[in-house]
Length: 433
Image (cartoon, rainbow, N blue to C red; front, side, top):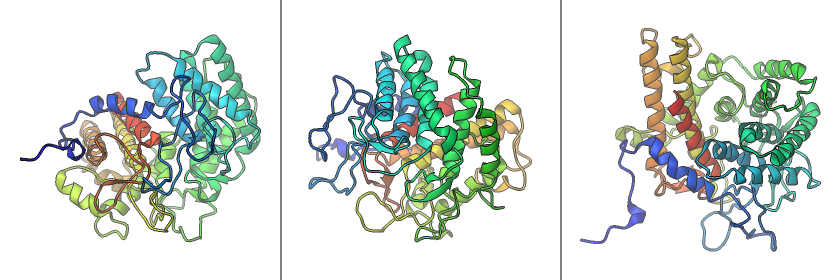
């Protein structure tokens, strides 16, 4: 009998406690956060060392020993903000990492690059990259979430960072941007949703953050703009609708992400209609975009795993136009949608079921005759099956960016910070529901 190899061990199906696993996921994510005693060196840009508060998107980079052609040893404003929200909600023994995050955010703001630069070197200097207006909004939401845990000097920095973000967004929110996936330029549903959430949070804040007089008008404008993305069947992620080789580009998972991180109501039946199409395109065998691994996982009682959009050509391993594969963040965010909706149904005592949302609820066995309590239980079970699939296909709990659509094995860059943060966020929503 041969020796057991740790690298071949997998969690037992549907046996792992998600809340317990999340405690380990938190520290796996935390490994990507720089501090004054844990310094990273940029493997591509010689002499660049991390400043405290920088968040590596992933420690992976292109070299002869890896199978990826991607360099992720950078601080993405979006990813870092999503990680910071989980740091604020987690079990940190000290608030120093939160202070570091705020100070690093200000360093990036003062770096002299475009204010909405999507990605920075780990020393806070601008990287050659696209501009994305969702970043300042998400960063503001993260700082509001952690503000109460900061000391007075750090709160002063936090207030200054928020004020600068709002000053930028005052003229940027009606403009165009590169989207969540950094591929298409136009009016982004995701960016508009997180900007709206940001403006609403600032308006309602009790931390003493100054509320600009232009916010009410901006909130009304963004609310109306989001409605313009509805085409009668689903929310379109970008306007104008992309017509390049990525088309049809919708339904796109960033609509669900716009509800998780933004202001789209979880009970919005147009959102649920879009979510139903998203699940169907990767989970139903008759779909042209069906993932074979979801067929195998269905027999295991877990899943499905979800991707980004139909016909995605980015696989994270090569520069060839191949695709498309499920992502951990897509799957975990969809599970969070289930959990948060279960909580809303429990609180309201009613199921938001109409002609638009009927297909969404039927996917989890909920019909007009299902009681609110039974509907909430069905939604929680569906979320659990998705997270169990993420867990089952993980590499000993470590999460990469993607899973192979056929084998289920992890692929693309390893230890993606956003993958961990999305798992943690989903489990927090589960606990709350």
